[in-house]
Image 1 (spheres, rainbow, N blue to C red):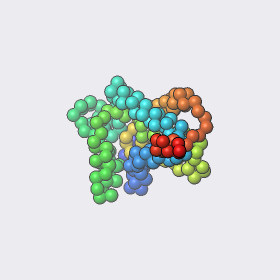
Image 2: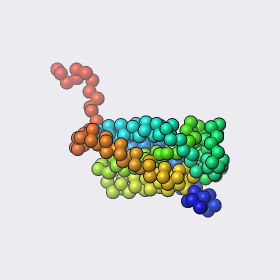
Image 3: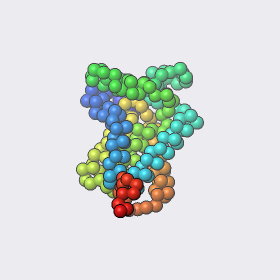
Image 4: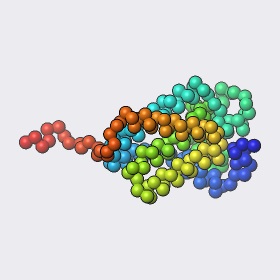
Length: 205
């Protein structure tokens, strides 16, 4: 029995709701963090955005070179590769939609074009990147929330039946590897503010 099998048999509404939080907010958190870096550390913002972009490119290539079914697909259709299958939010997030009274997760994940895109898990890569790039500028509260969000996402990816453990590990590896490359390219180690938005010719008199 896999962890996903166990959680399907031993789910709870509280766990469904809690783990739905990182799965439903990770895009907004990623954008909010980029806005934070714009004012705090512009060099880190450039590293963050380039790493974010390259992680998505690498994942997109992997999805098509090595298509892999997520756990929810296996539990719904077994080992048969059905290319006509539509993406799904999985049973846990479907239950959350019922509790909320509207089809948020069904609409969000049901539109995915990569049904066989379980490897790597970008769900865990994004929060890890926030931890890596935000650690220097975060204080105790920021670091605590960043680690909590990251840990919750790792658990959610498995609990919500969206990723196997190997998907999670590879997602973390993609993030760390590309982040290290970005750090080597952007060798600046000091923080830098965002460029001032001064109109051309201002202050020349």
